[in-house]
Image 1 (tube, rainbow, N blue to C red):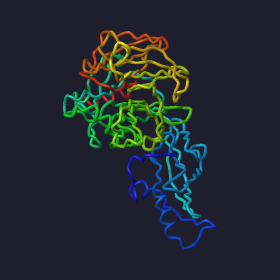
Image 2: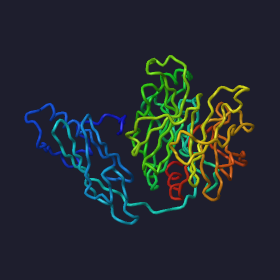
Image 3: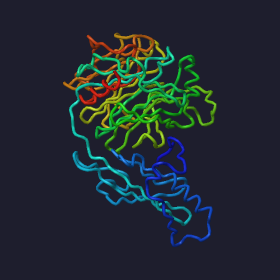
Image 4: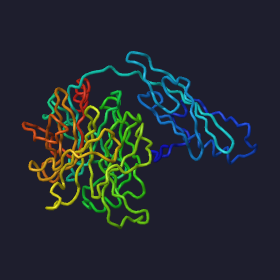
Length: 441
């Protein structure tokens, strides 16, 4: 059941106007003359939305509940959209597939039907990756540092980069704290949609990290795009519970086992009896699932070793997920891997029992590290792990030819953007690389 809607939806939206009007159908057992129930039923039906109805490119959220009413769905083409929202797109070159979804909303012995006309876009043409896109922020030292910057690789060279948009931010936040950190870009499973999510946090001119973890944002910032150039309006989406003091470094990975994205982030969790968040606690990694980055499941604890951990990132090789997480404890002789990266593995993305691979990753080559981003080479069996030397040089690249070994070697001969901080590297096609270079010189 989805929770935490991105924002309240007005009574009539553009989408609602393009769809068929709802038709009231009293149930046989409905008690006549119940205007309060009728109004509640209409309100519940009006909250329903099929997002991206005119250009659907993936599984869709079809809620089973709305404003206290129950909802069931019917699809006139179940081979394209099932009645639980799984989508099978037409093959590349085919025409879009029109589908009619009908929601039946029931409350107090009455029911209301609402119809949504949907177009499912055919699959894109397959194309090899021939470059990389790098999204990052540059730090809290300037008024514009906590926004989204982009850089493009020089072809398939994962270590040499050019800043885009003449070194200026490409996306800026106008919601929440009006600062964004830790931008993460994920490509949809079919390949032709992208989501950019980021931390809602502005530390420029502030610097109170304790307050940021007690009374920080419970939201993440979301943009989406189909071409990496034109981005949607920003969405300010709540994902964390009331007990959370912060919502840091959101990332996502698509879980084919459930047909949804697993979005994970770090939060300090306080006792429900401590609404002012005055107690002592530690950061854990939480996760929630979503199909559309608009509505999310209830969050669950994913990583909690009993001390603070933040900044998890994941990559899959074969049937194994490799997770990299920052050990956030204070440096001490008894915890020599504090402020460095821990590697773990599991065959189940959402497992709470990952196995140990390696710790202290980055130690010896940098003073401290956080914000790992990991990606595979487009040309060979090699992986890169960029680690942010916070308070120092920013991102430094490491590489390995064996994820399971846990051995990472500092890369040489690299030319990264100026002061890149916690972000993500996304493999992209030549057409995508050419397009972002042309759009953001």
